[in-house]
Length: 154
Image (cartoon, rainbow, N blue to C red):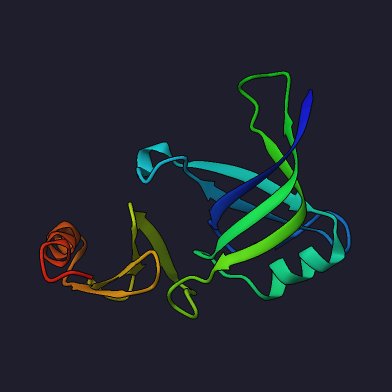
């Protein structure tokens, strides 16, 4: 098993959950070396630092951009997933919407879309939180983004 200290930026995939012992937490980060969703990789992360665990369980939400640093464990079996034991955590950017309970935040390159099962409309933001518009349905997201990119300078 190979272990390396590293830092990685990624989007919080789901709400963190308590770990197996007190003052621990586990979570998943969506990490991508490019802006293409095809390159996304989900990293399994955990922490035993009580301060980080508390922050994860009470202060962050899915879609937040986080920088996690810690020891990356690469198992000898190439098919086994890597695991990051987090010893430092920083919120780089909060998700564009306050509460995403019952909703899914998805990434389209530098854009973020919020899918809600209760409505067909899809709000779209830039990765920096600027409003792009609302697509009437998921099939219209590309048209909305194209119109935004081809309109006046942003």
